[in-house]
Length: 239
Image (cartoon, rainbow, N blue to C red; front, top):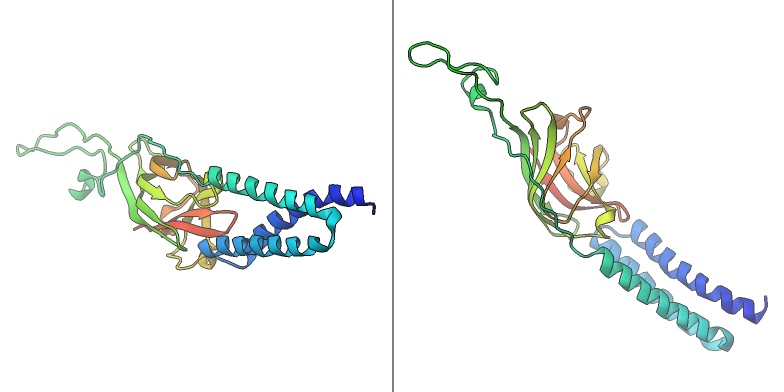
């Protein structure tokens, strides 16, 4: 290979080595924030190793150093952009723990009788809170807010987050909303789950439609999941 070709190939080779190594090391060795720092450790080790290797190859010194600098700056810019907080403020449904009519032993929408025994107007159907819980940060991340599954008066069901505030992880585009069976205590225990949607924002009130096929009673946790690192960002145990 000619010197000119080696110089040209050095730039993409360095970028692939750093970025690919970071991704592989973080995804396969660590968990949560540990994964990120494992990736950073790889990046630093690979950079130092490359600098030592090109000391004896003067023709590659400039392209390798330039590639190191450009790739590192690009990675920092991407990290800063991806991990910024994103706030949303949606109107969310609020449900009563149990409808008043059910508490009185009557089906929802049934008529109530006054003291004289005559029937009053049927009660207006209302939203019902099926399950709820508070978010807590997991895997070294922070997270607060409330998650609730609500059956709407019109028959639909939604999953709502109120006062949500979670870490952005690897960026908003990487975060998903899961309903998970049981109460996982580690990332590896998240095996039986239903993906509901992409997370709309790392902060604020937000609402997601629940498919009719989803059996809410089957799931005991709501999880904000980071796909690239296969880790939980926050978890709410609902009941």
